[in-house]
Length: 88
Image 1 (tube, rainbow, N blue to C red):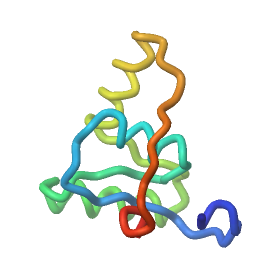
Image 2 (image 1 turned 90 degrees about the vertical axis):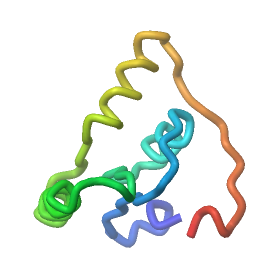
Image 3 (image 1 turned 180 degrees about the vertical axis):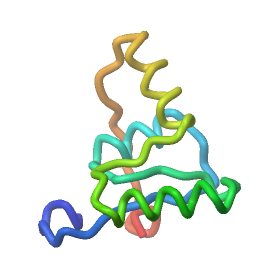
Image 4 (image 1 turned 30 degrees about the vertical axis):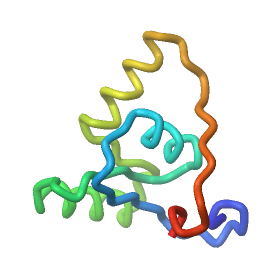
């Protein structure tokens, strides 16, 4: 929704869920970064610095691995229906 409004916010997803389809959904939605809540504080700090500093995206090894796996299987997109609460 932030992207539709074109408000210019940076979006970083911080979650406990490490599921390929969820990661791909957020990437397709245009998030700037995707991190797991159990990431090292240094990784969170690096992510914030890069995204706030102007880098369009921050991809860690989790995101890179999912994207490589999906590309190798030639999967294009994922359809997920999230509740309004899940989008918060």
